[in-house]
Each structure stands twice: as structure tokens, then as C-alpha cells.
Length: 93
Image 1 (tube, rainbow, N blue to C red):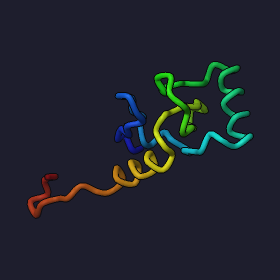
Image 2 (cartoon, rainbow, N blue to C red):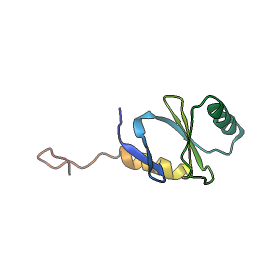
Image 3 (cartoon, rainbow, N blue to C red):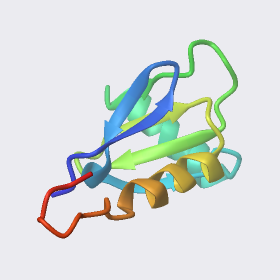
Image 4 (cartoon, rainbow, N blue to C red):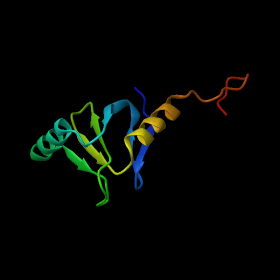
């Protein structure tokens, strides 16, 4: 499992390996997903009162609201998946 942390805004981070999807919150199905998660106490709001710009779904079926753009979070995932350089002696730099 990938235990790297991904920043989702305002000092909050999630474990990269637990994320299933990062989606845009504007569609009707995503609004329904957010409402159902709120009713079932599975919603985590880390927007600090700002507008929700992305919804993150985890493997534990929790729904996380973030004020960071979906594209920005996706780029952070791709940057986190890039392997760190290894020197010839086998030590990570």
C-alpha cells in the first residue's frame, strides 16, 4: 500500500493508497453522494468554510470535501507516484 501523504489543503493530508477517486463536485450524482455521506456520518469537510472544489472518495467509503481543485490534487498524486532517485550505492537521495 502507498502510505505517502497528499496535501488536500489547509494543512490536511490523506494517505494516497486509500483514495479511490477525486471528482468534481458540480454534478448531480456527486451532490447526491455528498448528501448520503453526510446522512450516514461518513463525510469529512476540510474546506475551512471555502467553496468545495473537489470530492475525494476513499476505500473506507468516506467522502472528503476539499477546497483544492480536482486537477491540482490529481497532479499531486502523479508527483507522489514518481519514484525517488536512487544513487549507485542503493541509498535514496
